[in-house]
Length: 172
Image 1 (spheres, rainbow, N blue to C red):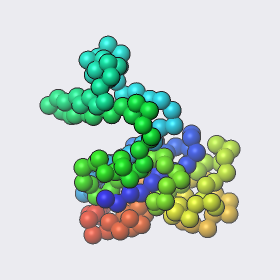
Image 2 (cartoon, rainbow, N blue to C red):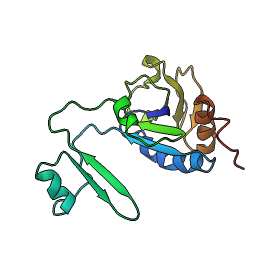
Image 3 (spheres, rainbow, N blue to C red):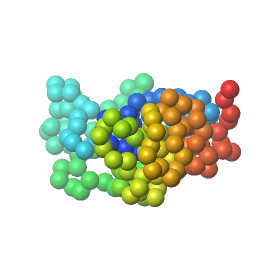
């Protein structure tokens, strides 16, 4: 599967871009999945629900299924955090996996950068960043700079960069 990262500092707009980018890529006929890294403890389950109680009781994995979806929760229980490659191996085959987070992993990325975050751009230290999407000028940028408002242009850039031109259809 082809990986393409959306990277940047917290508060830069990565998730907002992804939520707009996914439909643009799907409209081009691509099957897209996402992997999101969280830096903190998170829970997709709620206390009192059966699946939560199963995990709390010590189950290593809990799979919840319905006619509309299924979800698998895996408790690490002190085991090391899985690598990005380990997580990708668990996904069903798709054309493109968009990765939010894992900014230090060596896969092609688009940096989302806004001066308003007060943080420096990541691209000077990461050769895997292929372009920067921003809401304004990006000082010293030696890569393509795309407007955060131009989601179709960003989708086209990712398709070209990921070598998916033959799989994607034109929109217009």
